[in-house]
Image 1 (cartoon, one colour):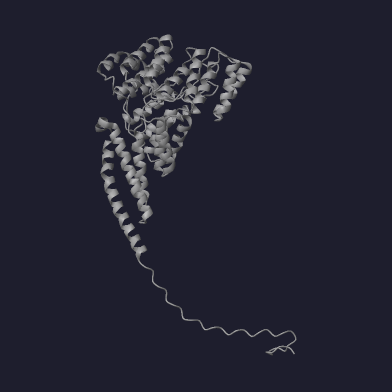
Image 2 (cartoon, rainbow, N blue to C red; image 1 turned 90 degrees about the vertical axis):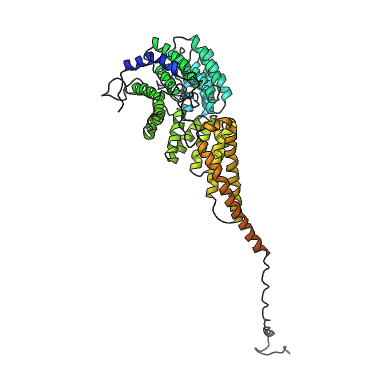
Length: 506
């Protein structure tokens, strides 16, 4: 049982160990990524912030993490937790009258999945109140759900033009850029906003977490430490430090911080800390429970808690689905990963993971569609080749029978599997030597040629048998004995002739 440190003790760790952590870390080290059957990321990532409110106070905002964060989706009009779907946002503009009415209509439509109606309502809000940053932000979230990242980018920018320190828009745009693998651009963007708002702990903590994604963990710790100097209770800053330590390989220390955020200082009252209701904290604990404790059931509980707190927390749903997939709970895996794709239609890795879950349930055609979509969205996602190879290999194993057609299909699928694994290996180049998939791929590339040879031999035998059958002349039919002609029927008697008389009437 791990002891629970006091909040003061953890804060002292954050401030006093920073120098050691910075000097001993390798800034190019990426956060550890537990391997899943899907090949998708299970690294920490930030949740969507959710629909912003018009007048409520800002809670801790969603923060990015190494998976591929998604932007903040709409959240309710009541104070809510941060993360996908439920981040409330403070705004200097209080909506009233028709502007408030249209805004609330937009929230309701977005919750119901009526995205076109939601977009129209938020656009109406902005027409009625040109300073309604919360409406521009929520419209951006809806645009992302519609798969229109270009429009979303413009709307996030518009929200910041209305209110330059509107942190949900900072978080939303930065995470969209990260999901698009434009991490340096996200860092530059967040850095500029952070410099312009040096006392905004939420924006600066978001910047720190982006630095972690950019392999600058030491700089992230320093940035978060500066935030803690003027706001020592900042959950977002402490979470950023935990993520930085995780990236540097100090997983035990990261888990120490996260557990303190959740449990607080009183060992008799667990789950009563400042971060107990923060979905991002719960999500990071789930990742660390996998990496440090190898405790998948506990990690699933943490991910489920994160999703419970923020139903639209895309990364938490993705990682929950991946862990269900690894645990063999394919129904739950498909359900959560389908929700992930619905919330983040342009996230390639979500499609990759959903495809793998569908493969596990033998829904091969749907799985291939998801893999193809992932490759369309991100041509550099090499895991697509690996997963496609697994898909073809599984299909080949499912082909039974000795008919020529069946064996021809089996040969084709084995050839496709071999080609896909070869593409994966060759595309990695020198990185393949240390890649965690190497052992499996090497095994596949050893077994597949053998299976292909056996299938080809069976096919040749089946084809030869078919040729012999077609070449054998058919036996001539035995002539039938001539039939004895049947006696001709007697002519019917003419009208008026006596029955049985053979002549005609006189």
